[in-house]
Image (tube, rainbow, N blue to C red; front, side, top):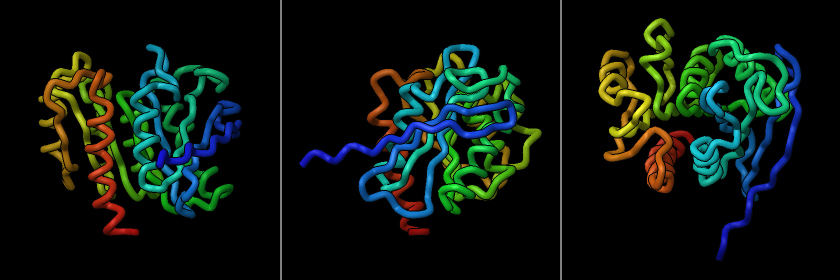
Length: 217
């Protein structure tokens, strides 16, 4: 039997720079009080909430009966404002988290991000109470993660070793330098946008989420 498609709700949420364009996707059997906030790649290089890697992150959450919320950072799509080098975008993500907590009663939140969105998702996990953190291809050479507090929640890093934009060895070195260290999954042959590898990425993330949700149903 083909799984039922998630119910999609398009939203405009008040943010620090003005309205934020967002969408929630709820699987038919969505768990109450849990949501995955998904952050997209760099705003100045075509990154939007429709990015296929971000879409895959959202689908992986839905596989676990968890609703996902994708949104456009300031200056992208219908979200107002201008690019702010990760600072303002982190404020946008925090506003989304606060909205989820107050309007959806989502007290259990997962922070997911891809590329630039990984930096924002990481920062979100240091400023809000996140249950899980997932960073895909974190741009450690472009943004200084080392100046940030290390999140205390369970954390997964997914990285391709053929990434043409993010050096996988730099990512590996960074993850080995922090405490507590994240779990790291290196996908052999995968490029930055995981062309032809999204199903595998979704499976790797899914297996990790299954284990984490078993610990905290």
